[in-house]
Amino acid sequence: MSAVLLVGLKITDLSAWTALETGRRLLEPGHTLSRIAREQLLLFEPEPGGKAETFERTLGEAVRQSNFFVNPNKERYRFLTSSERGESWSPPDSAWGILSRVREDTRDDGLKARLLREHPMPGLGAIRRAKVWWLWSRGPDGTPAAPYFRETLGELRDQRHGLLVNPHAETAMLLHGATPWSRVDRFLIQPAPALRAAA
Image 1 (cartoon, rainbow, N blue to C red):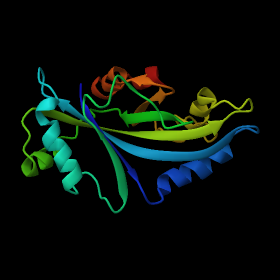
Image 2: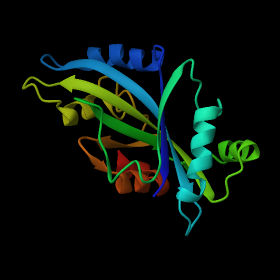
Image 3: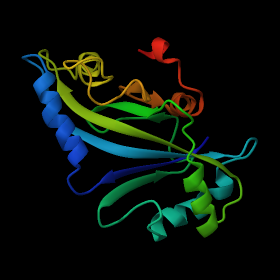
């Protein structure tokens, strides 16, 4: 189990606003997209054979008492320890999500090195990065219509299909309803599928 930090902007997120305006132009009649929000996800993985509890207290203090991860003037955050995050990750009310990560290794060794210089915490194995797009959408039948919106706004395929994920540089998974954290961990830790298999 790993600790998780989710960081989003308090101020207007221009990337999310642009995605919302652009995404609306891609939709077929009867489909509505009311909001898009973006969060950065940092997964704090313990060393092999270790437990996140060994560094979570120090990590939590670094999150709350310094600007290392969060600028409190511009950003909001949720820090979830390995015990607090529970078995599954649920989207915000009435939303669903697209979690995306780079195709190469998701570890940020530079961030880890800088963190440990300022906040030593034995037991921290890796910091992994991803981002999540939360979407509030409705299809003609009033349901969130996540498969249609993922097809239309997810992985870029041509000028009319795809927006939020560049399949040449990223891979993504759908977050619809409660998603087991174990599945999220595997998605972030394991190598990405080959491009032809993911497309």
